[in-house]
Length: 203
Image (cartoon, rainbow, N blue to C red; front, side):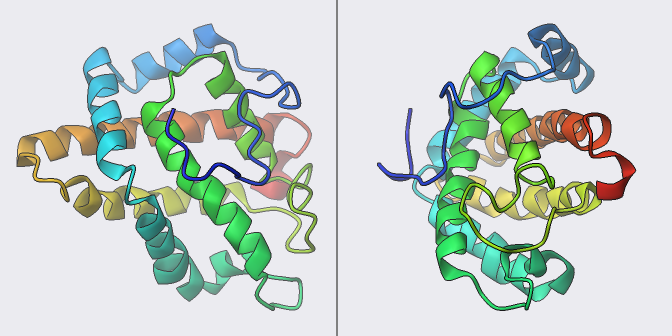
């Protein structure tokens, strides 16, 4: 498996410290069916991973500096409570953000992947936000902001998918597979937010 760095602080994928997801593999398969995520989509998602592997730093910089930083409602979640920059926090979380791109595209959607989807969600709720990196920032990232921001992730990824000379049809198929994966992930992230102790307060 490709990693963006030998050392990714707080990246606990596949470790015993990551709790088992309350979503079953059967539920995941049903979500994939609902999203019409097929074996062909899996093929094109892996192709996307190969295309994006050496572009993750540029992509995350685009998302963080080019989009999130210009939207105060989003930027505040990676700043101190006083609104000051937290460069060390950004550096660490950016590495995990970059690795998430590769995990989305290249990891098998098995128990470890399912468990880490829950971990990602919990780290954005008040149960775990700030704890991984020991910072003082906002208590949680509202789920509604995550759902809305996925539109930007989907819109902006296509030029990067087209950067390696693939045909327009192949780029479209990679893009569709990426979007289906993000819809599945949004569905998985909803459960820790909405049904496991956080409720409407963090919507």
